[in-house]
Structures are given as C-alpha cells and as structure tokens.
Amino acid sequence: MNYYQQKITRNLLGRNYYLYFAILLTIAITIGSLIPIENSIVTQVKVSDKFVHTFAYCLLTLSWLFTYKLKIKKFRISLIILAVIFSYGIIIEILQEVLTDYRQADFFDMLANLVGILIASILFKLIFQRN
Image 1 (tube, rainbow, N blue to C red):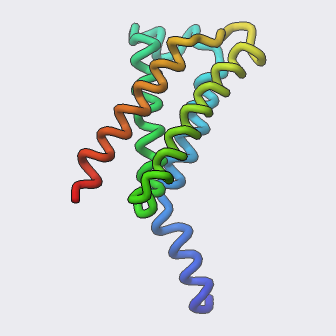
Image 2: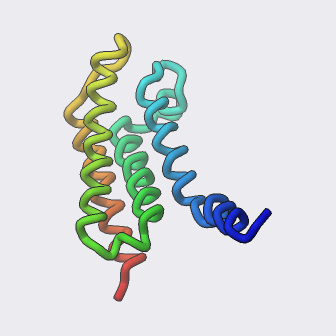
Image 3: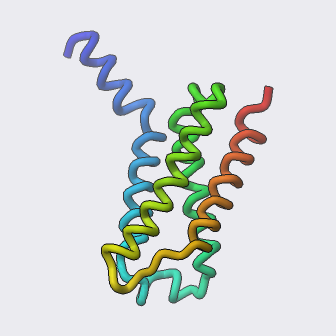
C-alpha cells in the first residue's frame, strides 16, 4: 500500500467512527419507526412513546453534531444539522402514515423529536464548545 492509500484508509476507518455511528443510528431509527410496535421493547417496558422520541432524537442529533464537531464552530452548520434532523423526523412521521397501516403520524411525536433536538443542541453547546 502506498502512502496515499494508507492515509485514505486511516482517515476512512480511523477518524470517522462518529459518522458510522450517526449513519447506523439514523438507519436504526428509520427501521424502528416503520416496523410494528406490538412486541417491541417500548410496549414491554411501558416506556412513554414521547420519551422514546425525545431520547432517540437527542442521541441522533448529538451523533451528527459530533460527526461535524470540527466544523460546528460555524453557527450555520449546526443550524443546518438541526433543521435536517427535524425534517427527517417529519418525513418519518409522513412515511408512517403513508406506508403503514399500523402506525400513524402524530404531531406530538414531532414535538417530542424537536424537544430531543433542542436538548442535544444545548448539551453540545454547554459541554463541548466552551471557549
């Protein structure tokens, strides 16, 4: 392997684990949002659906903020990330209504998603961007 191939491999496998985690979490939330929930852990443990939404979107937002943490110093980048994740949540709710007959779109789910996004944004600012 030559120098450039090693450098590319190291960059792809070494530093992008935040990206891999963010992508994996996005896929997991998409699948979890579109499958039936009859026998899921949410129904077995009796956890509030809105808490699950808030927690999931908080983790999702943190994962994407970490992925771009070096570029996050620019307010515009973090605002774009937050807007894209909120839009993703709206799209998931629409897909639940359109693609499934066992899930429905819910305004309060979107509100819980927004709360999770805002909590993540505040946590990220408070903890990881102290000047």
